[in-house]
Length: 104
Length: 320
Ligand code: SF4
Ligand code: SF4
Ligand code: SF4
Image (cartoon, rainbow over all chains, first blue to last red; front, top):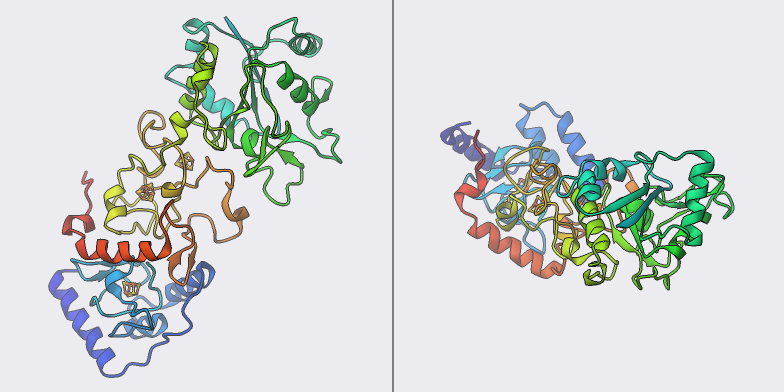
């Protein structure tokens, strides 16, 4: 994906979240088994179904929880590309967004 | 001339295979250049039957000087402490091990099975296996915590699943050439020369570790394997990235996580499904952090490293 395409998609996701898309932010996967189950569910989603991906992974457009978790510190976040490198997501993101696959 | 005897208990022969692949020095160099007389070895020994039993009895009695006793594999105690599940040369292997260790100048445990029990001693440990002087991290094992060979050293532990060929042959040479007393051992009786540093020392992915860029698939050239794929490099004592495998590479260089095979807890988490090649996390934070780093420090470090990460850290460095 070219960076302008990535930017368009980033803006599109931003609009969906700003328009109030309700996503499943809870439960947070407490351990690796639960994390793995979430990944399996994500893999079952049609790769083109962006909305379903965002809903299941619990996307928010602001830092989340008491610890203010956000993409910026997440292990899968590529800072310069502003990209979520988790293969099951592989989406352009903003540093202040978050999803429940966050890990540090 | 130093006499060496190598026996094998509950094992897969991996350390024998490794030893036969040694290059610096090779198994042949041990004989031709370092004056080691291999009395018997499972893949090299020529004696069979009565002749082998006589040789072993002579080692026990002192008629043949047993300078170095190398043991590979676990000491099998099943069933009911008899050791009958692992018979060798007419009797349970554990009886030979007891008597030969008492007669040996140096006793060397090669591989995880002989050092800490390794995979056979993983719960539920059906063969009632022990390492020579440890069972997992607990000191004692088959020979007991107080065991010392005639040279006054405890069992020299060279762990690994298998141990690297050169760790084996270099330790054998050190002992055979009278430098055994110079070997500094760590708390787990491993030679510090090999086991003081970490698997991570010399790993080509260190830059990605520092900048917190994760490899998410095996063999991926970019990224560090700690964050997602369960690499134990920062917590494992081994020289795998200093003394390369096949003189070429290492697991982590090739994009395969270190499984921590030189530590007594290997295989970690008793191989429970989902624990292999996957970083175990609690609320998104790795359960096992790099040695000496606490959770607060780790989180602070990650935030700072992510903020400081240069662009190149996200790109493939090793372009063909
Ligand atoms: S996994 Fe979630 S929190 Fe982490 S970078 Fe991707 S979208 Fe952001
Ligand atoms: S791949 Fe493993 S050994 Fe290499 S830097 Fe990462 S954690 Fe350390
Ligand atoms: S990289 Fe790790 S698992 Fe592999 S041989 Fe070295 S210590 Fe063992």
